[in-house]
Length: 230
Image (cartoon, rainbow, N blue to C red; front, side, top):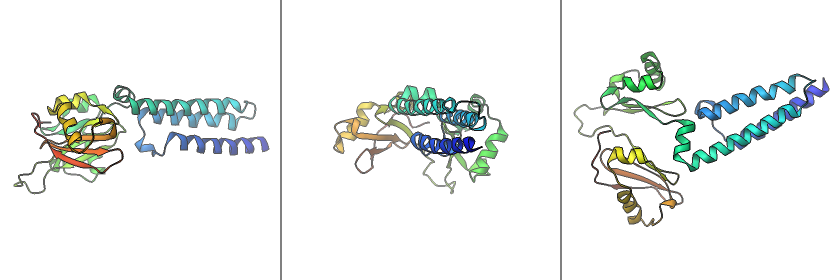
């Protein structure tokens, strides 16, 4: 009994330490690979703790291995856009400028009940008030409302990322009709000669570029774009 008691305390301390290393995401905010690793760790931790005949290191070694794997995968996904999309997928529009995107719902294996439930949970029971609904990589849904006044000229805008953590999103560059040179020109006009000093940049259909440097204040700049129909 005392042996099980000591194992439980050590396992608890080890798991708290491992979870701190892996980050502070809540369960609903985890990427798929993070959730899988967390579930396996929870299962592995219980085996030696409950069975006094299984050596304790049979649980400790897998926990440390999985935690290390999680840290490595997080680092790789932060440094590589391709790896990030491979591990976590990408955000998909469930509702776009043309309405509910049936083809995208099929890709995500969602039905209309799932979509309606998700929008209701997010505080949007009326689908007609939604301009865009984006299913994020962690499974949550983000909503952009239509203008409350139908006569209002200002349309609902959907920012799309162009530059994230030091890497260009080639797909979104093509989609928006914006060139790297045009965006880098905006960086330069605000004193950033090196794009490595930029953390994030996105653009809207009206050509407004939002830029967040790593160590300076955010800024916006209006660009002339060829697209604007996403």
